[in-house]
Length: 116
Length: 113
Image 1 (cartoon, helix red, strand yellow):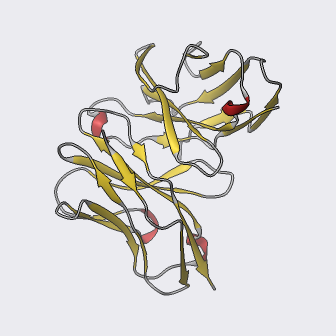
Image 2 (cartoon, each protein chain N blue to C red; image 1 turned 135 degrees about the vertical axis):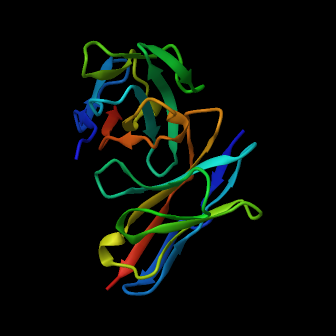
């Protein structure tokens, strides 16, 4: 069964450093998402991406964040200058096109980001 | 604004007994409702969804959920729990005008042998 993959599984970085989290969505999916889950808290939406542009973003997704689909398979989340409060599990998700309002999202296993 | 409440942080049930994980929601208009399960060190795995039609939705691994519009609830159920069902369960709601779900805080289900 196809699945969303994410690398690395765990990233440790120093405050102020840039990090890039990588995702490979399911191959025939056209909608891509990033979420984060701070330890012990709910899953929070960050951004959605379709047709090579951001379609929706939350208040969390400020100028420190950016997303990119650099090639036909990868979908990346960049945090330009990490803060301690960016420490969280980051999930990538993808869904099919068409009547996507009805389509469930398929999630990757997550990248645990630790900012020291 | 849309929101989801999962009133129980943890649900304990004996193997073989029925289980219920509760979820209530708030959304403008008719909702799309979802249940996801998260096993340790894994991503969220889709279980089932309610879009329209029959209020009783059947999903993966023998789980089902009942949409109750008057009570704005979408409780997850299973007639006979397995130890392997032990995991974190998330309810999510989405307004039909958006692709973005709002998740609940999650409920830890522990099934005892």
